[in-house]
Length: 291
Image: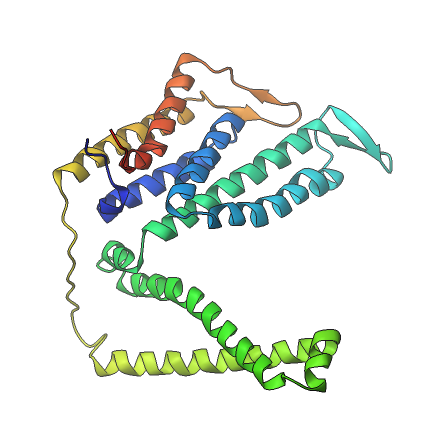
């Protein structure tokens, strides 16, 4: 049996998928829909990004969750249901719930962006934005390339500097002295900035010598819209559009202050949630299965 493969989707279809998922996530404060969005992002990210999606979720979600649900309610005292008092100030249930939902939303949006960065490479980004916004498309592709490149260069510099310190008293100072370690990291950061600036100058001179910006640009790509892309695009547009329509109709209306109020899950709300689930998990249909 042939399954849909998201890696073969046209860039326009991929952009529609990620834009629809993020738009549904940020348009509502309904905890059910936000949890569904987070589950979709985690499931799709686990398949296409591997274990690093869990590391990102751990390092991002826990600090944000502790701040939003643990620290923020100590300063925001809105709500009518006190849980306990700190210095005669009530910590309310509504503030805690609002902080939890806010942290879930931030984590979901971050994971959506991470999966998008995994599937939308530089070539696809240049295809999407290169014609309408050539400078923006070039800038975005350079940023996506620069971040991992800076990380790689920093570790090369760090390992080289550690090699220069071995063995001797300088290495002991680096290992056991905080001022020496800060000085060493400052030196490595200075080398990294110098290296990056020199590389940027070389890149700009190379682009100038190739005629970049002197005339009308042409582009070449291998992306072709297939019949499968049209079908998937129509399905995604219909499903995400239905979910956004249900959000606009108030099926997921939620208020946290002064008291928590959430619209009951009606038939229309269930339809909107099911449409969002189906659209979100559509990339997982591309996984090959043994029949």
